[in-house]
Amino acid sequence: MSGIPGRARPFVFLVCAFGALSLLTGVFPWHSSHSLLFPSYLLLTIAASALKTVLPASEGTVSVNFVFFLVGVCNMTISETLALALVATVVQCFWRLDLRGAVQSRLPLAASVAVAGGCNRLLSAE
Image 1 (cartoon, rainbow, N blue to C red):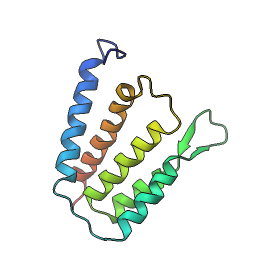
Image 2: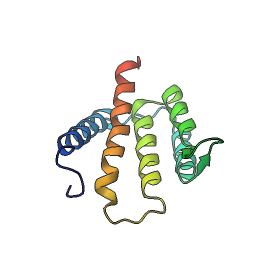
Image 3: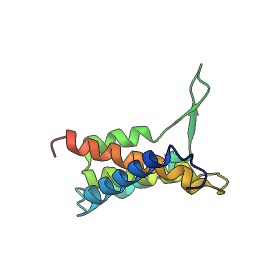
Image 4: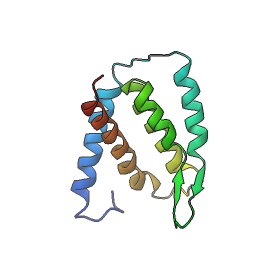
């Protein structure tokens, strides 16, 4: 964590800790509702994570995998949705990236996705 400013380190640590807790409580025990649906969505999500879309009148890009997150929230279990979101985030973070310092700067992003999935679990009635 040498590349992270000293005042931000407690925040990054808390986000990573809550992300790990959310991931562990959401994924374990694993429950899959459809044996063929999840692997097909996982492959589509991995392919979509490598794509970026430029919106008109916008300076940044938008990831296409947002659609698969919504489908996961609506049609899949929390275990499957967290797995989709985490795999998509990891692929998106490390696709065509120089790996120097990449892990410590991308770990909080993956953890925040897991926290968002955990919040989805708390707010939805599963």
